[in-house]
Amino acid sequence: MGLSPGLLASLRALGLEPRLDEPLARLGYWRIGGPADAFVEVHTASQLEALLGLGEPLTVLGNGSNLLVADAGIRGLTVRLLGELREARIEGAEAWVGAGLLNTVLLSRLARAGRGGLGCLAGVPGTVGGAVRMNAGTALGEIGPRVREVELALPGGGRARLPGEALSFGYRSASLPEGAVVLRVRLSLLDEAEAVRAEQESMRRHLEHRKATQPLDLPSCGSVFRNPPGQAAGRLIESVGLKGERRGEACISDKHANFIVNLGGARAMDVHELVLLARDRVWQETGHRLQPEVHAVGDWPQGRWPLPEPP
Ligand SMILES: Cc1cc2nc3c(=O)[nH]c(=O)nc-3n(C[C@H](O)[C@H](O)[C@H](O)COP(=O)(O)OP(=O)(O)OC[C@H]3O[C@@H](n4cnc5c(N)ncnc54)[C@H](O)[C@@H]3O)c2cc1C
Image (cartoon, rainbow, N blue to C red; front, side, top):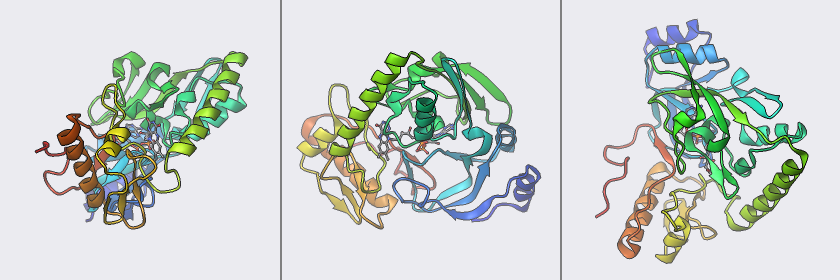
């Protein structure tokens, strides 16, 4: 699908060169999904602000590590953050970090500077913006309590700064204003040597544990479902006998049943079928209601997302 000549001209006037019908599967962790009508790489906060000012439908990609892109792809603009939106400035026990910076890069920058505090992101393969949007975390904590302030680009144009508390962080959730894009985040750090060392050691043990228990050798999006209170979604899915279940080339992992892995050419609809199967079987046999943690984006056939009510 094309963009109108007027929109193309507006993008070019902003110094942006959209790539039309850009395949997205290579950008997402699942390696699944169709093309973006127009894929735009944005290098500055001002460009992103102006882009939102155009009032076009816009999907923001972090590192695509929690996204299920529809087989038909994404209509409108799909945006990725680069350039100054990947920079980090560390000052004392705080850092201003661009939302497009990868968590792994942030963690190594902090380690080199003798700082810590973001050990909760060890093994989370996303960007800092995606981590804020998802309130990403692990057994070592969540990013939410470390967020002092966020700078946002707002739909329709303009920017806002909000204190971390305004985002009401919850389990894998944050309340951002509808359609807002995180530009930068001010994070509080650890700067005391002993605490930083202890965190490094916890991260090392945590990463070893993940390697032993998660299917990290195949494309996936990590945990497909949120854990219900007091329960592990993976154990519930395993308890109803769904480990190894396949639809097309998508498979509920034998190693960790809350992971759906792509064995080769899985389609988004294959994953959707497994998500429904797991959700409904767990509901019928255990009475626990699983809620997806992955975000489905793009042009899905009607009625697929949000998931239909269980039978
Ligand atoms: C192997 C593996 C292991 C994982 N383990 C964990 C884990 O332990 N803990 C955990 O929490 N997650 C885990 N995840 C899931 C995923 O890494 C996190 O949810 C991560 O925070 C997503 O970040 P991202 O940059 O990839 O965002 P994406 O997946 O690209 O996007 C996720 C959502 O955030 C939105 N978004 C992205 N950037 C911005 C922005 N700048 N402003 C506004 N919205 C934005 C997107 O539009 C989308 O709605 C895992 C994933 C994989 C593949």
